[in-house]
Image (cartoon, rainbow, N blue to C red; front, top):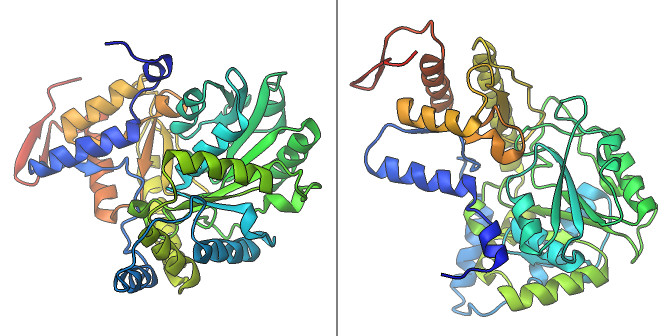
Length: 405
């Protein structure tokens, strides 16, 4: 069968593939623990449910505008004013089928084949393939000092004549690192000076810990007119635990939003009006659920980090936000794909290989599940990897025997 060059260059999303594997094992009744997931376990806001039901009851569920319904745009404008201290008009806003689609149509609107997009390492797994989908070149930028915190020099050294855009995701998936205010200020001013698009993937920006404050990229921009090349992306999936609703958005200048809307109109049209109504309910409703989730995640993070730090051979940085911990297991196995497969096969703990995020030897572990899952999952991993572990482990009534060294 003949496939396009793009089709041949794209592989399945590793996180979605793992979710599928988890579901299959769970359906078989296996005692599998998912430490790779990106879905908070809290309930979605009641305001989101009520808003959806109210619209269903009208009996009028129709097509939505390609760029989003007016009510959602107004809710996003209100959100932008509150959290970014910036007032925008509806023409500056597009609502999409998740933050992922917002980023995708942004890349389609600004990148030509063979142009380059730069992003720090570690990076969200989809960035490289999203660039390839438009024929562009992904350029990962690891920090020279080996940390999760990039410096301007790390980005600047990779900028060339084909560089068209930079993507910044802070707090970062997978590391949980929240980039410094100095770095955000530097990258905003650098991109303005070099006339490079800057996509701020802020999907986790309210899920931050240890008293840290939101960092507002607009604060450091000198160009806030229609020539601004900043695109801010956000959504309801993480902070409101509304992953299945697939509603995200982007804020940008009128010209780029118009182009993104045209592209989205031909791809998918506007997101479902019901799901947009749910997002309106979440954004305009009671916000206490976000803080409750944030506090729960901070506590879960502390438990996971303490357990990992008691694990000889594991190096772990304490995440500043998100619900991910990116731990270095290279003392046990440098090939993270091999290590991840070993853990699911031997002790039925699902993790995400660090290679998919640009750093082999690491595993992404999620702490958005229960404390019980975190404790038992790390205990199983420790038993499987630590040569000083006892020979036997019980998972429920099932006895596992260590038959490997």
